[in-house]
Length: 294
Image (cartoon, rainbow, N blue to C red; front, side):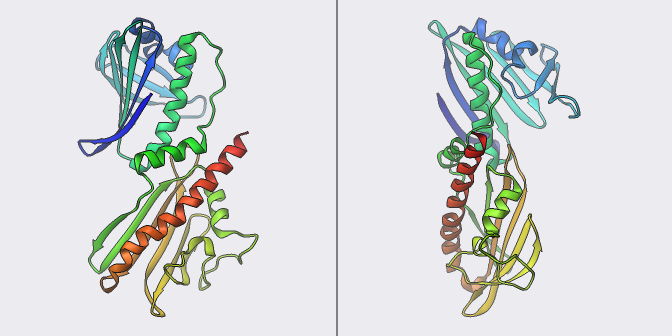
């Protein structure tokens, strides 16, 4: 199997190649017919099998259905459609007695790429079982360790640095594998640290030794904590942690640090210091996610 993430017309494209032991004529019904799609695709699908035909996705009672349109339908070679603004393409290429399946998912949310990749890998494993005639198994939550392996492979752990009107900013956006409350607990460490309060020093999980922490200036547990950082004993900028619902089953973390123009050397330090702070947290959460799934 070959997997990659690249950029196409300003969007992200996840591409997965998988060799199948079955010819395109056998695989085609499994990737286009609703009764077969329901056994490996992450939603119930109904469709009009033609170009510009309507395609509808549903996750069951209580969930609103969403719809898209089919942009390519060329049996048994190519099937493509849109879903909530994302583009999907399934291409089947004859390869000896079997075929090469080339799957791509084009989207805007780059930090979601690891969730998408691990989820689609699980789905394609289900497609393999269907084609081989093996028994269906209940869909599993993607492994936290698998998610983190895609973060590394796709270079999703690095932050960005920008110049602002009054100085600089460093920003990290990271999809995690545990829900908001679990991430907040890991950062706040309530068993060993006092509860976070406005005007107090933040719990150590929200800090790094590279930037001495001032006091908390904004707090909305379990989704937001902001505090001033200090340089030469004086407030120099702000550090803001935000947690929100993300893709998959975990929280989306956004960390932003700002600083004045006369501390631009600290920007490079921030990129390294926060990466070194976030990565052990993400690995710990991934391990917790896998233990909870057992």
